[in-house]
Length: 182
Image: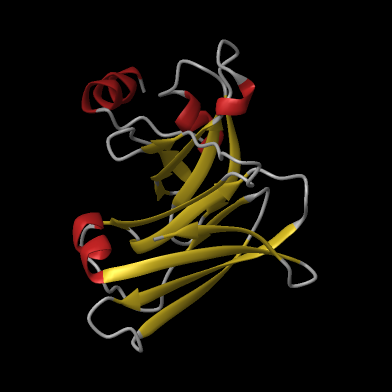
């Protein structure tokens, strides 16, 4: 058993019985998991450091690994974002990334006291605006993780060069609470 622990520590393959423990083992400050997708192995969590301005929360998106009901986490591919809005607008973050593990991923957060039911993200082809891809994503704890049906971009650079992106945060009455996009 001791040899296993030593080998695990040396190879960086330490596993945990919860995702929170796996992530926390890599973070100096307390974290709070806001949403995790066990099927695609994606997670959004909040950095809960006490010395930060509470209006500048840091949201972190990443993937994780699971084997034999044990979680493994690496900070190598973390996306860390803080965001605010000017002019009284609702702060709304919407990111499109491509991960090796999950493919094309749309993730984000919205800072509001209103109940946000879903986010609708529309990708319009810059060379053919009639060619559009729409993705509707449920919102949980004011964050969301969604996946287009087909992988259609390989990098963030090619995505923004080839597609116009617009996201709308929608409440349970169908009202648009916030928008984001180019």
